Every structure is written in C-alpha cells, then in structure tokens.
Image (cartoon, rainbow, N blue to C red; front, top):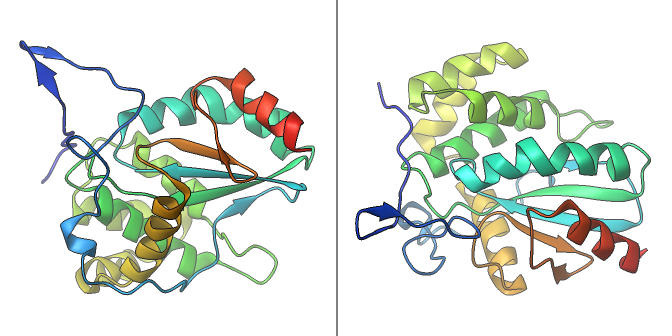
Length: 212
C-alpha cells in the first residue's frame, strides 16, 4: 500500500513554501510522459458555459492545488460558475508533486471516459477528483477502488493504470500549459492571461471582470 508521497523542498531543515508545486526548480515533463504523443482522447473537463474561459492547471498530488480546491474553487463556483459567467476548465499539469501524480490524473480520465455522456462530457470526473484528493492512499489499488464511489467498475481504472491509457491526453494538456507559460501548479489562466496570485479569489475575480 502506497500512502501519499509529497516532494518537499527543504533548506536548513525547514520546509520551503512556494507559490505552487513545481518539479525541483522548474516544471519539467514527468519521465513517464516522455516520448508520448499528444492526443486529445477526451474532452476537457468543464463546468459552466460562460463567455470567459478560466483554465486551471493542476497536479492532483499538489498540496497547493488542494488548498486551491478547498479555499478558492468554492468561491469561483458560487460567484462565477453557477451563474454561467465563466467556463471553468480543468487542465492536467502533473509536476510530480507526489509520486502518484501521473497515476492519479490517468485514473481520473478513466472515470471520465466511463461516465461521460453527450450532455455531460466530463461525466463524474470532478466528483472522482475530489474523492482522490481527500483520500489518504493514492496507490493503484486504492485509485481503482475509489471509482466504485462514482459508480465505475474498479477494473476500468485498473486497466487504464496498467496500460497508461490516457497519457496522450495528459501530454496534450501539458504541452498546452507549457506553450501558455505555465511553470507551477496551480496556475489559473483567464482568457489567455496567467493570474499572478492563483490563491487570491479577488485577483482571479478582477481578471474575470476585465475579460468580460
């Protein structure tokens, strides 16, 4: 059983708190994704249908992304997603903040593939993502078992983990983020512009208002 395994930078024995999670000093594509051709196998998980696009690049194993989800996303959801003022789009950008970061993203896409419909292309992606982040074990067996909570057979996730099925989709997001100047997670991009303070709701709101 593999428990959460965060990569932490230290200096003088003290943890260094950064504005986001990065892989060592700068964002670099995880080794497991090297040599994989980008392919948009699945649609981008999306909430809302507003005129302003808000892309959020995340590593599901990143503790700062977890902070974003707990403190920032609920405010964006109530103020902008539910009134359909923005189109909120999840983008995978695993920087291996945790040893299981790529596996977690791959598993979430497997759930999306199993639960998507024409009316809801994201399926239960966001529900599963929340369950994974809240769980204390990110090993392959646990990721598969968690799928049952969102009415997906564990075998569907296990097979995707074994075959690296959705790596091309992860690479497609990674390349998009790299081209947009993304260097850490979470990164919030509003209408093509990166928000300097991704944990500040007011800063994101101001960017949304300016883009509207």
